[in-house]
Amino acid sequence: MLRPTRRIASSAIATTLFTFLVLSSGVRAGMAETFAYVGNADSNDISVFKLAESGEMTPVQTAAFTGVEKPGSSTPLAITPDHRVLIAGVRSQPFVAVSFAIDPRNGQLSHIGNGPLADSMANIATDRDGKFLFSASYGGNKVALNPLSANGVVGEPKQVIPTGLNAHAFLPSPDNRFVFTTNLGSDQVLSFAFDATTGTLTPNDPPAHKVPEKSGPRHFVFHPNGKFVYLIHELNADVAVFTYEAKSGAWDEIQRTTALPEGFNGKPWAADIHITPDGRFLYASERTTNTLTAYKVDATSGKLTTIGSVPTEKQPRGFNIDPTGRYLAAVGELSDGMSVYAIDQASGALAKLKSYPTGKKPNWVEFLSLP
Image 1 (cartoon, rainbow, N blue to C red):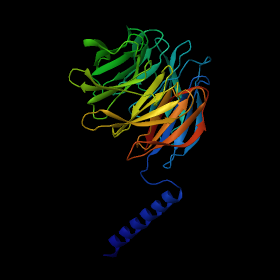
Image 2: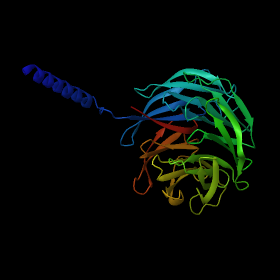
Image 3: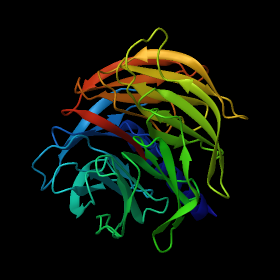
Image 4: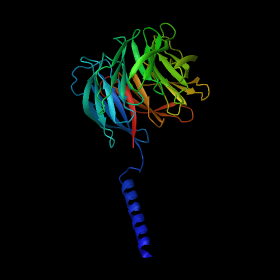
């Protein structure tokens, strides 16, 4: 009768010892660690930071682009859905996508290989299954689809499709059935049906959604519930809200507001837009005023109420929100820096915590939590 008791006691002691060792090492059991990846165009590298629960950022690595000599105008990034690979688009010739393996233990990057892009691509994104890479060329007026190999290296373009002027973003719908691209110079959003099995794009019906002239549709995000789309326009800084019909892929505008702070009289130059993972708050960046504008999202209608604007890094081309929805990090192309903000969980207001140096001409931020 004593032996089972001894086994239970031994197991309990081992469990206690393991817990002590884990806690004494400064890591909580089961706690996810979060990393921020910043694409730096002029230094041709990625700044890797570790995000603490307090919002403090610690630099952990600078990952250079192997086989790339000349800087491009920007450095778009994408992370595969399985969190194994980070891909960076290089906008200097020869146009390539640089793939890095993400170390699941410490978030650091190691070069896997380079693959061809169809042109200088302003935006890259994977499909929801991580089998294909979508890319949009602003100067080339085209979009492309490339297959991704099993190890995450980009293959030769499978489809290259001419668009209207200045294709800028090219992103899949939440269910992976459609892909949409903005044409900034033609004031339209193109719609494609996507066969995720064969990796084939075909024009949807209707193939395009028009927006107001000279508004310049740029970046967009889907609400986490999949029912709404939020589109920022570069040339007039409008933020438009659309209902999204998942069956047909149709967009229907229901609201239009602005990313400009009160009293602005200059020439708008809006850039990026992101929504919190819980869908309660939306944020947009504007480069002329160097500001971030916050909005509260109505859970039922999807419509926006402006919270207010805060100053940020100089020329904030890119920013993002961490997976917990507690922090926002914005980078400035002309400040070579990143500012981190706490997101008030009740109001959505931004409170600046601290700024950090990055590489040269940062323009893109991706967050990733690793178990």
